[in-house]
Length: 72
Image 1: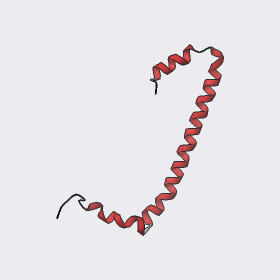
Image 2: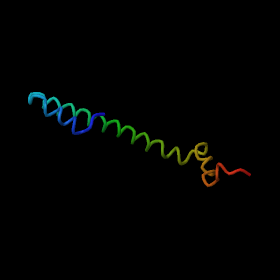
Image 3: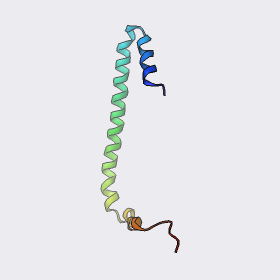
């Protein structure tokens, strides 16, 4: 990924007629990423209840206090 300063220099080197397209594109990317984030956030919220309450998923949490690498 190019550095921010190099990217800004490239944008400034473009003719002014392209600026509106750049702004629109950046807005599109920002909106797309926000939608993706919201989808992931909702999925995590939906899975959280099941993760905390499903016995099959929580049964191994009793081992959290155990030293896994300890030899006996």
